[in-house]
Picture 1 (tube, protein in one colour):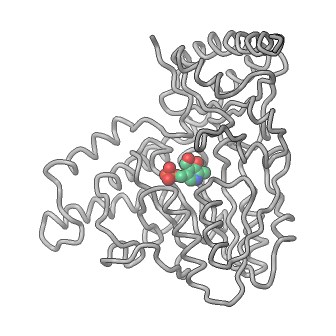
Picture 2 (cartoon, rainbow, N blue to C red; picture 1 turned 90 degrees about the vertical axis):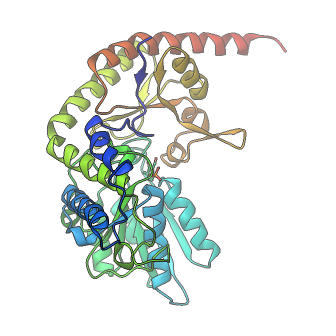
Length: 389
Ligand code: PLP
């Protein structure tokens, strides 16, 4: 069976060129970058080259990049780091209702420490209005955190406009760019952000490595304390192989960004258009014009997204549901609820996310499988509804 993977927003396969540069660092090149001997210095050189590549991906200076264990750590380090660095008696954060849990739960942890948090609303098309951020500002606001691209919808947020609001108020701005880094051009100066999170496994590097951009002059309290790695900003011996992989992935996506985005967007648009034609009542969730090139979130009224994802998986197609199973109960996605979908609509929504391995053949196969599977699921639901109890 030809298996089709349309869940690149969850994680991407490691690119073969990334694996190739990593392997020596899992073998003979095992030095600790903090050691002064040649083993250590070799590792140090590799880490610093990777830092330059990651900095280039987001238009930063290499001294502004701190390596982390991924998007979750970067988000936590940004939020915790700003809060802990500001000891005012009353502190307030502005974020949005449809952030990833790495931001939402970090903010909830800050609430438990007495920090107030405003969760700004999101429009029906999955975009945050900068005026909502302005309205939420208070004299005691110490941080604004708004994601660059939403992970479920792919919608891109007006970060540069939000940065103008933040700058006028003198408040630092963090953006979670985990779903945009490597997919769309990013320039931290153009975006006007003080802090930016990214994660390697979303663009061809392995899981467990990421980075936080911290603008020069912006002091934040480290999340991890210990040895002086990352110039005292993140303790712990570096994940050298992972960092080398992240650097290689950053170089690759930067070198091929426009062709790759055009190729992937064309495949995504074909998938979406054909599904809209072939699946009655189907709809696209979120603004179809302002989103990452690889993501499509579609609603198929009358199906249960979890059952659809499982049925498609049995047929060899991996995608993801607009619902998450937490402790045995299926919750409608907080993102889809935040943009105003009914719980029943969120539970009928599925995310298709493409990537560097997606081919024409994958899309042709997806178009064979999805309409027929949706039709079968709808028949099943209809027959269950008509069974007298
Ligand atoms: N932020 C966003 C928007 C994400 O999509 C993810 C992962 O899905 C994360 C943060 C967490 O990243 P990581 O898996 O590297 O911890």
